Amino acid sequence: TALRDVAEALLHGLLTTVKGEDLQELKKLIDTAGTGHDLLSLFETIGRPSLCSSILVHFRDDAASLVRRPVHVLSDIDMTVWVGAFGTGGPKFPTGPIPGAISLF
Image (cartoon, rainbow, N blue to C red; front, side):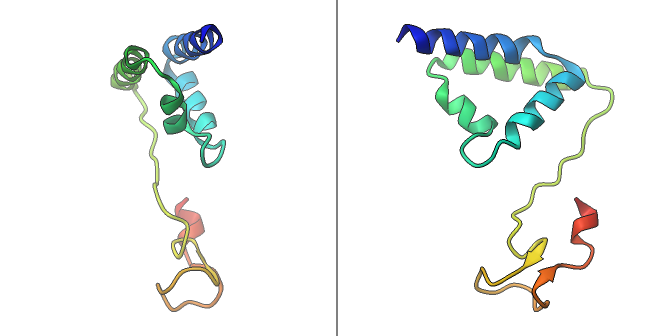
């Protein structure tokens, strides 16, 4: 539809004009919106592969020009940061934060 095309064009324009630390911050804000509202889901809503490719090329080119590269820790929180009633195994710690895990993040 026309409205979808306009929305995709706006997203493309936003994501391909922001650079450097501003782009890092924008991507981080999008990714902290919660399950189903992250950068991956944003790409899944864009129907035109050419727009997705253009955004990814911009991300790659911008990353190549960064002087200070951010460090990201990827982890599943279950039994990594907190031991609770969920899960079927894992370390034998009492319920609560796993020692040292919080400071890692």
